[in-house]
Length: 295
Image (cartoon, rainbow, N blue to C red; front, side):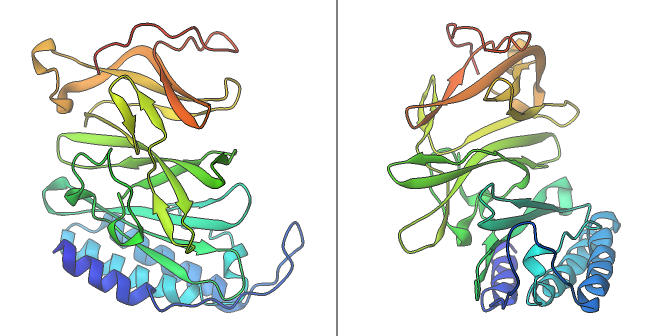
């Protein structure tokens, strides 16, 4: 089934070439009436993809949404169109305005989730790049660098305002959510970058944790728990709730993990996102690192 999804998604997007025009920056753009009507049609399809009772109906509506989105983004100035009514999907723009990334998730049978996305570059005759979710095949997922065809899927809700440059490579840091499975959910810190051929890549060995260097960070926790994970501009850190098992006998069984009221963080230093334990959010700067706790 995952293979079929990937083939269909690729066919819908891979040959799409955009023709864009107009001035960049704060200048106003004119939009065709078709863009406005297309946005309404897209919102209807996405509402069904989220709200329909059966997985079949949700996936059918999502297929129609993808097909319509591909057609819509072919229109002039589509890159600059806000798509404000598409509340169920995330549309994030890179801080240097070089691309936008669209991402969303659709609930499958058995309360698992599949992710969909595409990347749109802000340049004339740019290709729209489909992102094919293969996260089920990437275990544990923290040791892989992947491309658009084997994407570690997530619904991204934040792109950090600062681009991190390491050895001439620009890294865009993303924070995302994954509904994952019936009893657990995940939040993810990942990085997006482009190789020498201009191909989009996800993940890089720039996350330093007590267990080593990783390509992305994945937090898994109980379905009925809440975890905050966000960029803290004041402290210049990625801040997240610390997760622990609610029952010590379940250590390592992440469906039982929840927050304990303390915070962890990541600061970017010398080309690495470095984990820091027990961040004190009452201060403008974080407290000194302590001995790492058990994950």
